[in-house]
Length: 147
Image 1 (cartoon, rainbow, N blue to C red):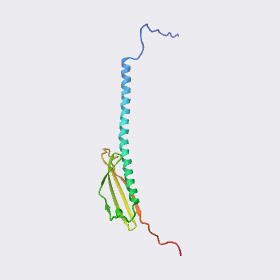
Image 2 (image 1 turned 90 degrees about the vertical axis):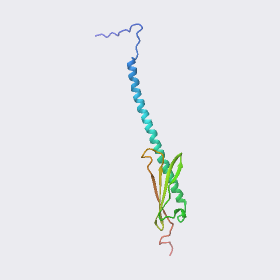
Image 3 (image 1 turned 30 degrees about the vertical axis):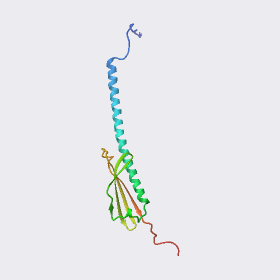
Image 4 (image 1 turned 45 degrees about the horizontal axis):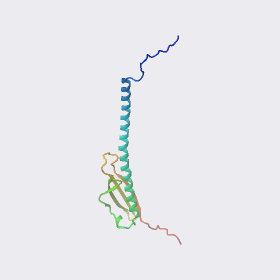
């Protein structure tokens, strides 16, 4: 059996038909819309993550500020004290910060900082960040050394 290649007639062109081109465009459009949806989802989650990261940084800054204050300073006097919420702006975002100081014992204080992002519609991104620390007074123990 012998295969004979058919010759194309003079003037006949080969290429894609209009139907093939339309189907290819629809397939590419569906893929492009899927990629656009993924980008929109990523942008939304990146904004929420940024709010949470800044909220953690704001809480950490406040904890560091309170750690620098001497133990007997009036700023740390508490029985317990809940400071009224303060609106803080950082990184172009607004947050509500609430500080709670509790005298656990005469030589120990528990400090809680709650920071809540404002203006974010995502429930997971607008949850409160809580940082808790304890401050202890410097006291000598029963053994002070020496005879």
